[in-house]
Image (tube, rainbow, N blue to C red):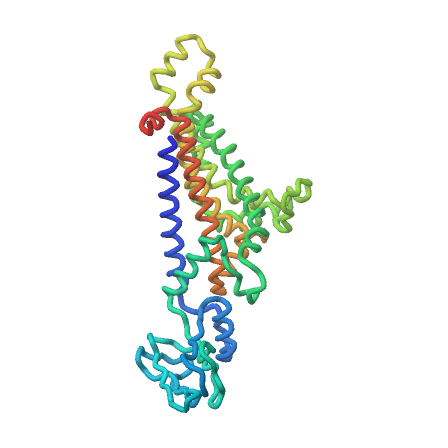
Length: 385
C-alpha cells in the first residue's frame, strides 16, 4: 500500500511540473503583456519594471571608462557579435563592446560622456523565456511564488492566496458536502426502489441537472429565488459566519456549485446499488434472515459507494475550477476574483500561483481518493500487496 501511495505521489509531482510548464508557456505566448497600456510606458519605466519582476536584466560594462557612443537601438534587436557600444578605457584606448548573444534591448542606461565602472549597467535587455522559466522553477522550489504585478511589487502572491483561499475552500467544502448528501441519498433510494416513481423522478431530475452548467444555473437561480420570489439574497459573502442572515447568502452559490455533481453522484450511486444488490453475498445475507436495513447498510453500501468514491477526484476538480465562475457570479471574495483579474491583466505570478495551488490540491485529493478506494475494495489491497 505504501508503494502505491509513493508511486502516485511521484506521478503527481510529474503532473504538477507538466501543468506548470504548460501554463508558463501558454501565458507567455498569449497576445499582450503585463505592462501594455493605451499610452506606451517610457523605456526607463519599462526597464525598471522588467528588472523588478524578472523580465529584464542588466548588460554590465566590461571595463571602466567613458561611454563614447551606444550603437544599439532601444527596443531593437542586436545579434550576437554585433557592436553594442564603444567605451574609452582609463588608458585611453577605445574598447568595442560586442553583444555576446542575441539581445532585445529595453533601455540604454548609459549616456555619452558618462563614466562607467566594471559591472555598472550599460543597457537593459529582455530576458529569454528559458531564463524566466528556470528562474521561476527555482523560485517555486523555495516556495516563493513571487509578487503580483498589480501591486507593483508590494504584495506577494502567497499573501493574496492565504487571504482568499479559505473563502474558496469554504465554498468548495459546502458544495461537496451538499452534493454528496443529495446525490448519494437520491441514488441509493433510486437503486433500491428501481422502476418506481421514486426512481423515475430522481433520475429525470439528475439528467436535467447534468445538462446544465454553473454559468447557466447561477444566473437562473438568482433570477428565480432572488429577483422573482425574493426568498434569498445573492451577495455579501461573510467568511465562516454561521449567522442565519449570512448563511442565507451562501445558499445560492453552494447549490449552484453542488447541483451538477449531486446529479452525477446520484447516477453513480444508483448504478452501484444495481450492480451489488444481485451479488451472491447479498443473497446469502438475506438467507441468514438479516433485515433489509442490515443487508443494505452492512453489506451492499460499501460496494455501492465504489463508483462514487472513484468519481470524487474528478468531482473535486470540477468543484475547484467551477468555483472560479461561481465566485464571479455571486461576488464571493475568493481566489476566483484574483485569478480572473490576473488572467485579464497578464499578472503572470498571480496566475501561476493560483494554478500551482489548485494543481497541488487536486493531486493530493486524487491520492486520497486512491487510498479510500483501496480501503473500500479488498481487491485493490491484494493487488498492491
